[in-house]
Image 1 (cartoon, rainbow over the protein chains, first blue to last red):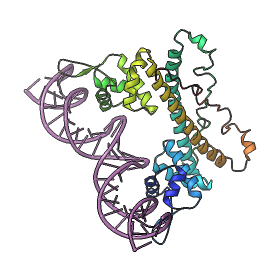
Image 2: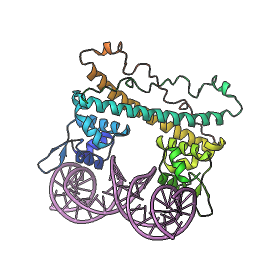
Image 3: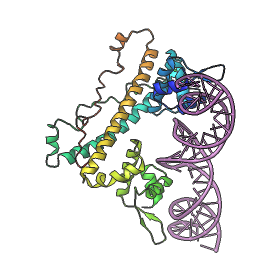
Length: 147
Length: 147
DNA sequence: CTAAAACCTGACGTTGACGTCAGAGGCAAG
DNA sequence: CTTGCCTCTGACGTCAACGTCAGGTTTTAG
């Protein structure tokens, strides 16, 4: 398929796809006239790129991690980077959860101005109960292997 | 205290504090010579600003929400904005969790290359079990009141 | 064939939260 | 008084992921 179709199917702009190629995140065949041609798999690949961007990874890191995301082959050195990114994301999630709870607390307080905080636990919309978010499963050991 | 001490105690740069003032996020008294003077409460306020920045809110939104964050007084219109931001943060958390699980899956697979996915459930580091993250407590109703 | 739509390669513009530099004044110590 | 650190106000620089425009070629629809 050509770039316009890929853009439509992946939900990104044509400019973004050319940018990804410039950053070595995406490759393409070329037609005799020079137009980019993509395989079906490119759609999923772009979605993966988007997902990693959404997780706050810059292009540089995505380039580093991309080979093992596709092949599943992970060298010890890459394992460290993967763990580092996972931990960073965990920390970021924790930040977001704290901010969210702060906002949520304000919202529920404003919605039920006459109830006490004890009553709130009985409400159908508990502020923070049951969240139980596991910040990490890998903080016990940083997995330094290849140094 | 003066700007240098506040910066140190809040863990931000002096430049950042001046930027916050420029964005109407922070106010200060002035000494006769024109130097900024802050109260003790400024430390916590800067930490709050940092927390909201970390949650992805731009200065403009923080300015809007700041009064009710401090006073606890929430108008119906502000309630909508608060809910909107909370929902946005929830969505962002969901994105992050998906990306994290993807990385985490790769990591555990690479760490236990000889175990099956069933074995992984028995490992001390389960990939996704027990996470149980509540995306939102407010999606049932968007709380349009003053809208 | 012709017009429109899609594509190409540059290359400059945008946005947000600052970093950094320049030049000048303020403040406690010796 | 001078040394040295802190502070002030501009104002330009940065970085990332694109948006957008210019000027030209290719593909598609009629």
